[in-house]
Length: 537
Ligand code: NA7
Image (cartoon, rainbow, N blue to C red; front, side, top):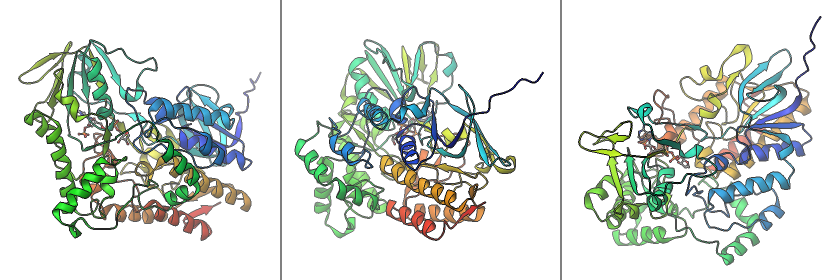
């Protein structure tokens, strides 16, 4: 007797991830008449803004900019309470968009895709989640997020520690009561810098374990200014248009076209001071046009920020430990903070510089060569296996049994950050080789989802079964990405942008920093030239 197995559900497109990129891809592809489904590991939508529930989690791009542009009513009606939105507001927005556009019904929440296999005879992808049925789809859109796969530090003795341990990107939804506890935070990137001041207010004692001091600028966050909001909404069309045409990756921060060497020392200090005091810290980096490209120009700005740290932190020794050195400002993600450096003036806060004072975890806390601390809770603000991590956690098998992990062994390759040779009908949002984390990701994701929807419509209109790219197209694009990076100082830093935070990861700068406008032009030019670099079969 044969047992009949049910046929897997079939879709035109499966989207992996229901963060802001994935949600919009669902919306856009459905509007184009496709049958769509998404798998999302989280129990709700929002991606990064679902997972990062740690105290102080906040976006570092202004709320009026960091939002969807595709629906005029949505952008007019939605009210952002704060100038820089905190995680709960962004998660609320993701839920609102899911409900408003009836997207939730297309998503399997709490389901992580573990395996993706391209079936050549069928010309379809088979998608295997860890929960629920496998499905098939002609196209897969990987909106898996650039910062999803969490990174734990390789601190000696970590398994021995008996207290509570939390990674900031997997922070319990119900929160963690740190009142009266002795807490250690490992990591001083954007996340550490956001959470440290808030933990210091609650904990009996806070120990910060810093491997690399970071540049951070004051966020000057505040309640939304009503007049600013009105003006923004009245001109949204114009601003969104401008964002798509910026060099500065769809973020408007008033990039100036003058060299830092074209002004006197006094003028330079005045200009930097004005930017420092302005409503968006990143304006500092836009004050002159050579900060990202000239080491000498960059060093002047770095000095300005180091002086600010010395002015803020009372203890000179601690201030020096907190002064970033050894990499140009802006080449590791620049942080925005609220009272970060001031936190070190508190009696209940201590800083350990891991490079000069290595730490070993013990059963009850940690010790260095000279000191020992009892600790109740360790918080890991140690970031992510960024850019490729989330997709690399899925076993992806393309044409001829080719594995994506093998294809990317020497570093991620892609054409336009959208497609990978040998993996037909698999398209990426914020893929390596796209502007991704150095763009305003909601806008960039919308733009890519639209481009992908147009590509799929084109494939369908020709009657082709699949679209792939070629190794030559990947090489050509890798050359463009590398050339754009080489014009900047980014490759000089050991950052997660180049994979330096993950042991054994190949060092590749996988972000297109030639300008969001140039990226759009390159993708549009390929489309206009009959999808040059793509092969329809
Ligand atoms: P980041 O920016 O990767 O920061 C992680 C921090 O953790 C950083 O200070 C790291 O030091 C530190 N780290 C990582 N591994 C270790 C080990 N093994 N030992 C000690 N310290 C370690 O992650 P975030 O979550 O802060 O921010 C990610 C992005 O989210 C951010 O850039 C924004 O785009 C939003 P390092 O600098 O590597 O020496």
